[in-house]
Structures are given as C-alpha cells and as structure tokens.
Length: 222
Image (cartoon, rainbow, N blue to C red):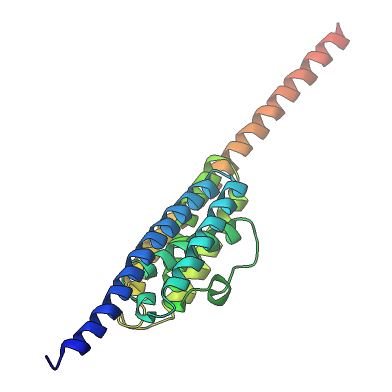
C-alpha cells in the first residue's frame, strides 16, 4: 500500500504521544493532590507540612513539564492547566499568609493564564483565613486578609480578556466580588463586636475597681 509506511510512522508518533499523556495525567493528579493538602495545612497553621507537600508538588510538576517537552500542546489541554492553577494557588496563599514575596509565574515554571486563575482562587482561600482569624480574635490579621483580597480583585478585574485567552477568569472575578463583599461585612461586624466587648470589659473592670475602693473607704472610716 502507498500509505502503509506513512500510517506506520504516524502510529508510532501517536503511541508516544499517548504514553506521554498518561504520564502527564499521573503527575498532574499528584500536583493537584499535594497542592490541596498544602492549602489545608496552611489553614491549620502547619506551614512546614505545607512546604513538604509543595516540594512534592514541584517535583511532580518538573516531571510533568519534562514529559510534555516534545508535546507542548499538553501545556494547555488535558489536566495540566488545572494542576498549574492548583499549584499556583497554594504557593501564592502560603506566601501571603506568611507575609513573604509572592512568586511570579516564571518562578513557578507555569504559564501566566493558570497563574491568574490561581491568584483568584488564593483570594477565595483568604476568606477562610480571615474567618479563622476572626474566630481567634485576630482582627488585625482578618483586616490584612481582606486588604489582600481587595487588591487581588482590583487587579484581576482590570484584566479584561476573553475566555479564549484566559479561561474562567471572568467567572472567578465575579465570584471574587461577592466573596470580598461578604468578607468585608464579616470583618467589620467582628471588629465592631470586639470593640463593644472590650468596652464592656473595661466598664466592668472600672465597676469592680470602684467597689474595691468603696470597700477600702468603709474600712478606713470604721
């Protein structure tokens, strides 16, 4: 057949591509799993555990990038873009919570598109961090988390690109707006409640002090 040699060559190429695809799927799942575990550890304040998970995620990421070195289309199709996004989210969240420099896309070895959606998801995780801070009476930290959320929302909102350029960014920005508004309300109410509680405590302490002074005065008079 005239096409026999051509089809044979194509078949070999497709087999190699499919093998790499399966390899990338395996590595992507590991990246997503490790990044998710890191986010949970961050919320528990277990930063060393988070870093261990992120190092494992980075190793899986390096293997995935090596696997798609000959098939660059896998950067933008299949599970790898989601893995990029999850890894970026965890790395950005850890940096923000620990008051460190936020890593750039090139430093994470990921494309800019999933990095941006990772920023949006990290802002969503900051809401949870803010609520945890409120429960611990760390209102200043809750305000800081809110400010970071607002900064991320403002920057991402200005990036008016169609879905074909940055998939899901617009939808995530719309969700961010609601989350930022809800968090602002929660932090404001918690701050006001804390001020009221402290005012009551000071008033109660003043009453107790006055009673003690009155008692001392009666003792001296008798």
